Amino acid sequence: MEKKILPHDHGQSFEHCFDHMPQTEEFAAVSEIFRQLGDRNRTRLFWILCHCEECVSNLSVMMDMSSPALSHHLKLLKSAGLIVSRRDGKEVYYKSSGTREAELLHHMIEDLVRISCPSGSSEAI
Image (cartoon, rainbow, N blue to C red):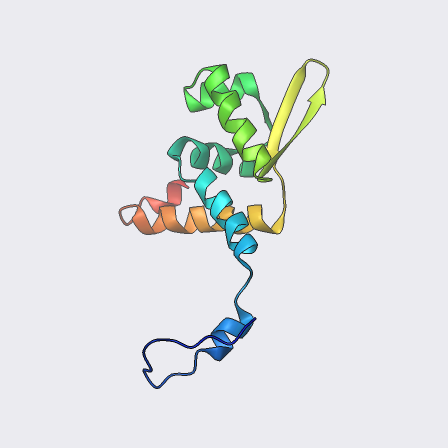
């Protein structure tokens, strides 16, 4: 990376930061994952699929959502690499992809839900 000269000198060395900064494309991948979870329905759906493998019909009931709307959310989560699917006859089952990213996001969601819940109700998670 080319040496940067900042317009203001605050007496700090910034070279170490720039030397270890990921490429813009890497931030784009992370942003895309967070964008997918920016919708509360997809966050909830992802959380469910981290805990079980389920078909669209059952997920529709669990999410109180139409199958077409649910399928849209499933498609987005799958394209982001957060969930996977498998076919068994006519049924398609979905679950968390089990990747490091999916596991980290699952734990992060659970931790954030505990932080935002009133004390004493975190046990319901």
